[in-house]
Amino acid sequence: MKKQVKYFIFQKLHLTVLQRMFVMLGCLMLVVCIVFFSIFNYVYRRNIREIVADEMQSNLNRINEYINLIITNSASVSNALMNNSTLQLILSQQYLARTPIHVKPEFRAFYNLFIDISSANKFISSTDIYIQPQHLFLMSDLTATYWLNPAVIRYLDEITNTDGDLWVSTEYEDKVCRQFLRTTDTLSIIRPLFSLYSGKKMGFISINVHTAALQRILQTVQGSECVILDDENRLVVDMQVSQDGTSLFENGKFALLLPNTNSATFQKFYNREFIIVSSTIESVGWRLVSFTPTDMLIHKGISLQGYLIAMNVVMIIFIFAAMTMILRQVTKRIRSLVNMMDSLKGGDFQLDFREQDKDEFSYLLFSFNSMIENVKSMFSEIYHLELMHKDVQLRLLQNQVNPHFLYNIFNNMHWLVKLGRYNDLDALISSASVFYSRSLNDGKQSISMYDTVEKLNSYVKIQQIRFHDRFAFNLSFDDDLMEIEILNHLIQPLLENAIIHGVEPVSGMRRIVVTGRIYSSNVITICVSDDGAGIPKEKLKAIKQSLLNEEIQGEFFAINNVHHRIQMFYGKEYGLSIESEERIGTTVTILLPYLTSNNQGVDNCV
View 1: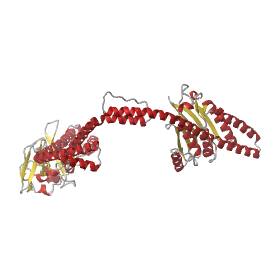
View 2: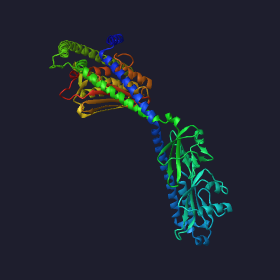
View 3: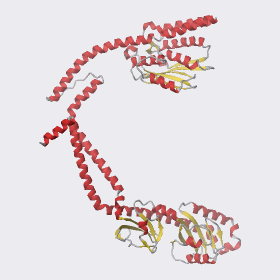
View 4: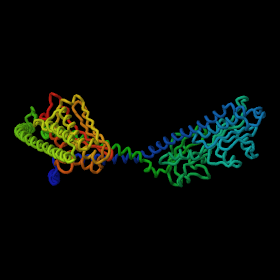
């Protein structure tokens, strides 16, 4: 019963055997994808907490490395300043006692270096140097001063007397800005300043880092919130904590228990569960903490969804590859017959496909071979009839060229007689005699390149008589081309166009160049170029479109005539191309096969 229903459905849909196989395999693929999604969803729900926690920890470790790098760079700035010889001399009271410090060129050079070092780091807002014995305070963003109020001096001395090689202060700028108008949006990385001569602590160096720069680093964490806490779990720097994050702080302290470094905890706070991960900033003993509510985990698994999509794409590709292999095995025998039909359609009748197997496909191939033999004989008759028709067409096209030019010659003779230019008339008749003796060419369709050059030179003399030497003519052909033969009446119509449409519409002396070159071992290019009027863009577009039409008619008759005669005899891959720019000039290029002495002649190209 099920088999009948399935057959009825396929019959109603009018599906072929191959289409039925594709439908069945497509349904199988859909079932596999549904099963895969179900399994993945089950695994995803069970492991998303651990996966997100690992991702949060990885991001936190990366930020920790970046912040440690900032602190390390700040230490490098401090070392560079501390080891400066001028600063070490300043630490000596004798150096300061001899003359006021601000007039010393060494001090001015050091102060410029001090400013440059501080401004070179994009994270550093400013750098301060405090020299305790003299109460000298150097600021990279302001100036150097001895004028400090007692409260600031007490605070600076307190910092100087603090033990340790490096510490970070969140209140340094707040204390200092009471006397100086400076921003408080910084963290100060402070290192003691020692005299290299006496080994005594003489003050400190404070590197003031932009808090905004640290916030931008914290904001690179995707999908969770990140803050920096001091050793008392108080907030030092945050990334604009949301309302959910703000609720985790009580009296300025982080309310939840911090996990060990490189580990995660799941803690509830007011009936809402959070994932908490942390990492210790070793250089200062502070903690980086990242947290997010577990009910937002679905938004944290975006990357996993991407992996899922990629896996399904791979699976679909795999299934399609398997389907293709199966269908290839099924259709292998039919494909042989199809390939033979394609070859036959392309004109290859030299087919003789035989198989050793004795089955239905072998019988079909044998019948197809018999059919090819019958088609060969019929096509041979049709081919010769087409050659005869083609020859008639060419002669009709070729005969349409000469009467057009003959009319121009007689028209020129008429005006020369009226104007009394009998010497020009004699030269015109002589050139016309040479031109037509080469054009008639004893009735042959092909003409040697040598005779073509003579024909073009005589034609140019005729036209220069008409146009009173308004254009210069240059003809250049490769020596190897002079003995080959090409189809007659190819170049002269294009030369005539260059004169009539390029030279005649504009004033002044113009230039026409005809060149023939061997482009490659089997291709010739003949170019007719002028620097005359050029062709407007719309008209050039119409000309190029007309070359694609089968019919030869309209205002572009001459160029269409040449183009279609070339394609008729040499093949569709040859013909004309035209490039032009208005008021610049025009170039028409003829592309022909290079026929050597072994296969020379137009008849061989048919």
